[in-house]
Amino acid sequence: MRIITHAWATPFGELLLGSWGEELCLCDWRYRRMRTAVDARIQRGLGAEYAAGTSAVIVRAKEELEGYFNGEREEFSIPLRLVGTPFQKTVWQALLNVPYGATSTYQGLTHQVAEPTAIRAVASANGANALSIFVPCHRIIGRDGALVGYAGGLSAKRDLLLLEGAMRNTTPDLFSYEQAS
Image 1 (cartoon, one colour):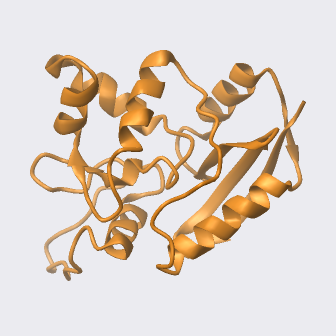
Image 2 (image 1 turned 30 degrees about the horizontal axis):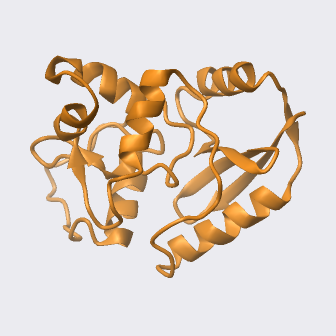
């Protein structure tokens, strides 16, 4: 079986969608820094290669995402295939419990899934998420409320949180800047 992949431009950036059988295994930012490593992990984990195309799962994922982007959907129903280590899957399952319109911190996420000293491992697993938006890693922020580390870039993270009402729209002053992830 092959992993069917499809690049798709969204209002927030270009996503790479992938289906394996009847499940979505990939919804990730196409031009992220870890693209090669994420793709290799998924292909190795599923024992399959990528093949460009489309599938019923991809069509459905796009429909659900369009509803989300239009503010008409807060939850997703598409079946997901999480591909990673047992620890990564534990972190990603915890991310699924962060509700629409809410945020958590890396520290809060760590307390749910690991020893308090494992915050870097939790942050790394969060960053390795290949199912962006469906597994809402964008809802994890710094302890001080800062937007940090997002594969789609901090502007996409901010825009997704604004869409969900998880943060208010603030205009940065002339001296602020955001660091690219």
